[in-house]
Amino acid sequence: MVPEATRPRILEPGQIVDGFCLVERLHRGGMAALWHVTRADLAVAGIMKIPLLGEDPTAIVGFEVEQMILPLLHGPHVPRWIAAGGFDAQPYIVMEMIQGQSLRARLEQTPLPAPEVAAIGARIAEALHDLHQQQVIHHDIKPSNIMFRADGTAVLIDFGLARHDRLPDLLAEQFRLPMGTGPYISPEQVLHNRTDARSDLFALGVILYFLATGARPFGAPTSVRGLRRRLYEEPAPPRAHRPEFPLWLQEIILHCLEVDPEQRYATAAQLAFDLTHPQSVALTARASAAQAQSPWTRLGRLVRRLAAKPTTRSTTQQLNRAPIVMAAVDLTQEWEALADALRTAARHVLQAAPGARLACVSVLRTHRLALDAPADVAGTHRHVHRLVQLQHWARPLALPGARVSFHVLEAPDPATAILDYARGNRVDHIVIGSRGASSLRRYLGSVSTQVVAQAACTVTVVKVPAEERAEPGEALAPQAER
Image 1: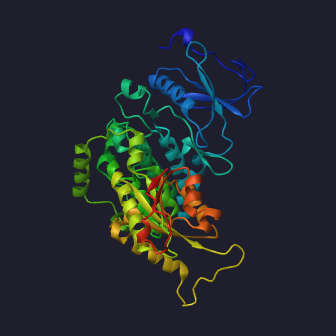
Image 2: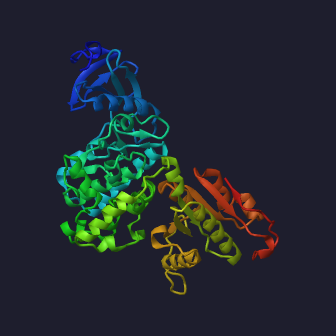
Image 3: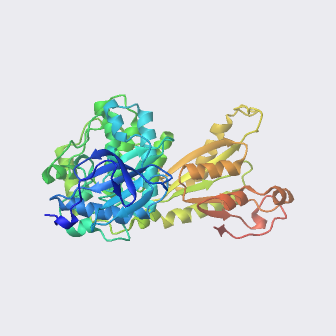
């Protein structure tokens, strides 16, 4: 029982709690009540979360977890933390009220068109990547815990089951049952492993499946026995529900729902990349599957899952193992020596990160005012020709299709196009060639110089010795990294 001294008083509209005026109770769930609150100095609408202190200890522990983690988070994908009150008086958390709808409101409209499923999934994946970069695993990703701002930005809420790499995991210390919401809980959570950020990707896969088909891939189990079925049973492929469903999106969804986290996407950023570049998705047997696998396959899945060792990597270590690497390849007047040097640099980066993905990018320069003809004077389609050149450049790297993609950008300013692509696709490392110094480049600034100056990620600039260049008079410069 909760001691009388720590039992919160009955709250009514108009009451003042630590300077906050309770305006309206918005929701009362099994764990907490939510109130709209105001205070003279608040620049944003506030929402107060008050735990319901009953017989369930997880409500208290989960509230403590959220009080620890929420103040450490920042950015557009989480609500802004404002204040908190302890259990010695009235426990509460005050945070920014998100002015938008939750994803739960869309469930009645399912199944959604494939492009809409992909667009929603990409926004959620971007929010998850931002959260994971802050060393936090959510562990309760579901439609009611995802909201959207007016500009479409996904916001993750309710961090009561979350885990921070650098804070005590109170839930793991005090409870032995799986923690999460039945339809969305990952296989490793069922096995009491709370250290793998790819658990959130599994939950997002469940959401994508539901948005695409209107059905939950594993039903809505209410017991541990029911939860354990996902260790060996895989869901019917989305195309079993919707035969017209695109192969590339089925590939993505089933990739998220792999029972072994090592077989899922390595990071939320890589998942977002595929959702926004369907033409680059490497199709496997998942894409064309029309029905769930045989009982023998299920048994094999169970044996492999039970034999697998839980990850001991931190969230940051997992992200570092699987960056998105961009090779910015200039093919306008390609020097073989520079092409080789750029491949060598890209190979070294990929070898250091076994889960890395390489995006090979080339910019097809266009005029600022006039429209460019799609074909040159010889009748060759410029965009297709550049794409073939990119593929030829990358062939010696011998990367599997799931780890490499090719992108031709059309823009008047190559540096701006490269920087915009890097920002929009959460690129972690840019490898770019430089053709050396000339009077014009010193005056205008080279593409690589602008990229180094403005990129938010690591940039490796590759040059080659002067004697190997096609143009004379350029000084020798070593590889440089920022």
